[in-house]
Structure formats: structure tokens, C-alpha cells
Length: 60
Image 1 (cartoon, rainbow, N blue to C red):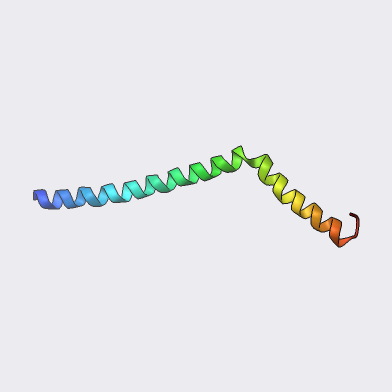
Image 2: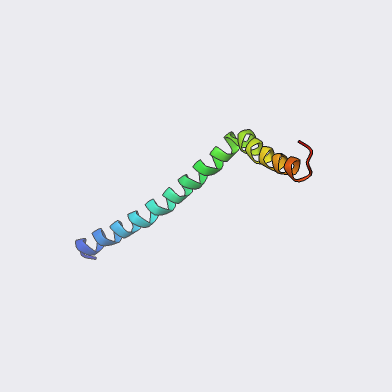
């Protein structure tokens, strides 16, 4: 196998593996952030829902 073909194959393999590992790192980072801020995220959504229920049924 000529050196030029080997270099090209190595470059393509490096690109594909880098992209795959990058996607995995992004997924791990996002899910980790969701786990860490789970309470705050839940609080934001439940306060919004309870506020809507309060206004809808005139309980406020």
C-alpha cells in the first residue's frame, strides 16, 4: 500500500473516530448537566404549571 493511500486512510479514520467520540462526549456532558441540575429544572417546570393552574381555576 503506498504511503499516500495509507495517510489518506488514516486521516479518514481519525476524522470518523474523532466525530464519534465527540458526539459521545457531548451526550455525556448534557445528560450529566441534567442530572446535576435536576432539582432546579424540575422547580422551573412545576412552578410554571402550578402558576397556570392557579390562574386557570382562579385559586390565586
